[in-house]
Length: 101
Image (cartoon, rainbow, N blue to C red):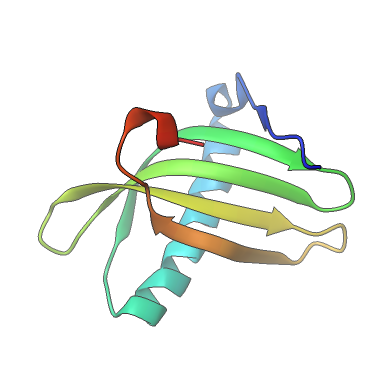
């Protein structure tokens, strides 16, 4: 069982926001390469976390398309104990407010 908790207050620190923006940009780079898109991070909206050995960030964000359209996205960033970073989930957010991580 995995426990995911809201990281309330985490986005109040500009250094944390910058870190998550970097993670989101790297996650979108993988999505853009795979899908042939040009999404750009607009804003980090929410972050939840989980983990013990590796730390998992569940990021909800807005992105801009090459046409200037705003979309909602979700990305899961996993930072290992050794410092490596990978993104097992990068996707448009499902419709509806109950689907935000």
